[in-house]
Length: 217
Image 1 (cartoon, helix red, strand yellow):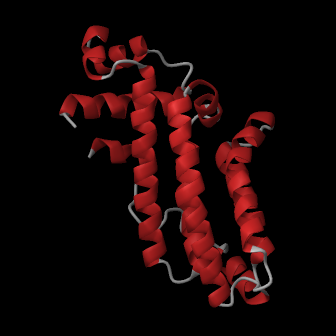
Image 2 (image 1 turned 180 degrees about the horizontal axis):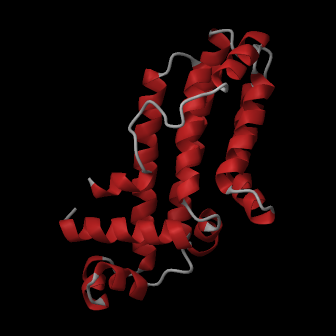
């Protein structure tokens, strides 16, 4: 990717994450970059293509970060605490309407997100549940498939709940994930989860800094 293309994606990400997808136009992007809209169209044919590129890069960054967390975590609950810290920071940076607008107005990008959720996220949740059961931190009588579907439904539900309440997206997602963890914990896992929460570092052990900074590499 050329330097100008990276600048376009970085700037567009910042605008979309801050203001939402519908509120930002190609004129806004060109103006922020200090280039003409004609120049912008030489690299990306329309807003849909920019959104699709951002979505794919965001997914790649998230996968990289979550793989790193899984490999460095001490146990299944430590992994989930780091995931919670990472996703909380991520959701703090994006506009509450972002995913809802992605679903409604950008079908290609949305399809990419759904594939990521149904393949990668599904696998990560399952791996964490199996790990937790093996470590004695999760109950061995849980229905793994049911828990996976419940947690995946919660990903999209968080955006809807945030738009319907006065709670932030980061707060809603964190609360839903905490409830899910409590629901699968054994007594040993419950005690460990409570210990990790009092307190836990604000940032994950993986790569530090804003998610948006990843686009600037």
